[in-house]
Amino acid sequence: MPQRLNPGSWACAVVFSDHPSYAVGGHHLSISAAEIARGTTVSLDRAELEQDRVDLLTPVTPSARTVRVRVFHNTSHAVMADGYVVTDTFVEVYTYDEPAVDPDISDIQIAERMFYLFNVGDDPSHGEPDVHAIEYRSQGNRSLSKGDAIAIDGRFWVCDSAGWTLISTPRFTASGQHGSTPLGDPHGQ
Image 1 (tube, rainbow, N blue to C red):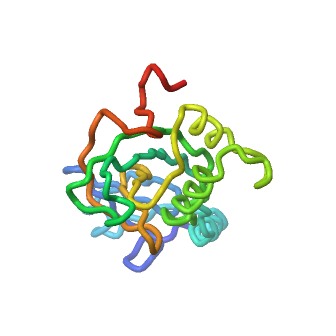
Image 2 (cartoon, helix red, strand yellow):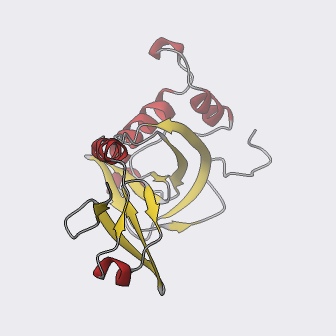
């Protein structure tokens, strides 16, 4: 027996310009608002509606994401003493995509991992050397230090004595100092 589509049922209206359409669960109905107002009935399979309700209530687990990671060395000579100041300039020295990052992992957790990787380098006494750490060091780059910055999907974080601080996009330079090999430098590998 057809069921009447009434307010309070499992229906939602979606209006695209002047063409209304209605969805009940995952089912698309071609019925106008005027037809609903007149009491037009539509046939709906209760079992399908129940399954749709179960599907809608089932939590969705976010999938892993790829994160773009960039490493910047601070070019200020006073950075180790003074820490980062807004007038400091940075040279980009390394970039890579980190695949399959769990959506629950925060920028701070990613930053802490980067700090560890780019300080340990390829020292096997700290476990299996990471390919990015090996490549970073083989290009002549020094350890990631206080005052240096990283970008995670375009969000910039500076390393300070207490951890990581979110900053606005910093100023950049194309030239580095000893221990900082700019990206694209023919002397880097």
